[in-house]
Image (cartoon, rainbow over all chains, first blue to last red; front, side, top):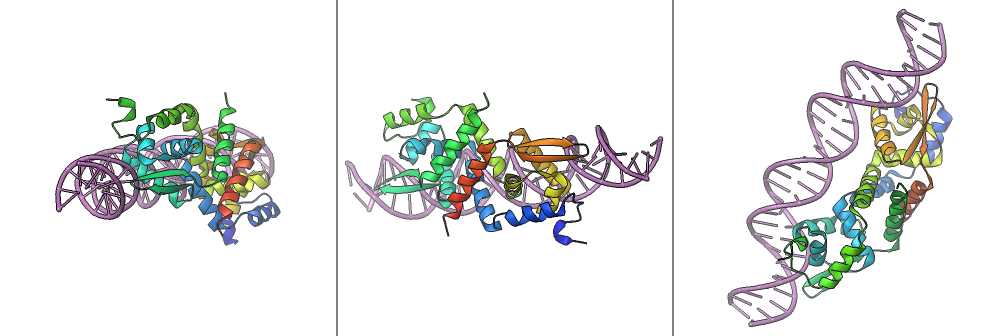
Length: 118
Length: 118
DNA sequence: ATAACATATGAACACATGTTCATATGAAAG
DNA sequence: CTTTCATATGAACATGTGTTCATATGTTAT
């Protein structure tokens, strides 16, 4: 009968409507999901974790994490495209750092949440 | 020569060492990565987004998001296992809500970061 | 110019992931 | 007890993802 309710029985239609209305626009939700997914890989998370402490170049990141240069570069591209990291070119080497403080807060909040479980 | 540096040339060994030492324990990093990955799916992110506003049962979530009951249930299991959501049983129906305020902050920070890009 | 270095990129492959479909569990109603 | 309802779960399948390998680009040094 009601297509956007997808033929599922509903206990409280008013609540459902309210929930739908409070939802952020699809574009924003998808972008945030992409951002979380980018942080959802252990290696990429270690990358941003290291960059939270100091600026580092690709080869030092690879060395510190025991990853190949290629893998690091691919990972950094994902983070760069989502504006999670910025790069600075100094002749041959390229230094990466976090893009802004939001990322640091996201990280800090996340670790706080996780470290709460002993 | 130095195995845990993985045979990659290093520009500043002291920096690399410092970066390695500041890194959180692997267990914590992996758990946080799993948490971010769980939030990295648009449907699961919409689920937690709705639960941030109010407690909802499975069928209402499915209706509001236009997802199948099965898909919602599978998604909720992932979120439950990572302690992102809690459930409360009321006879037949099961109500879900966010597990704690950390999740709300994570969400808020994330949206703030994303919505900054017009 | 040529070699060495730092990084980026594309293709390919193995592996993870999300949904669907069918079915199971458990609780209320008839 | 049988049916209906709310949710959970397992298998299967298509799609997405991260790494590796090979190679390209651009920069400094010889």
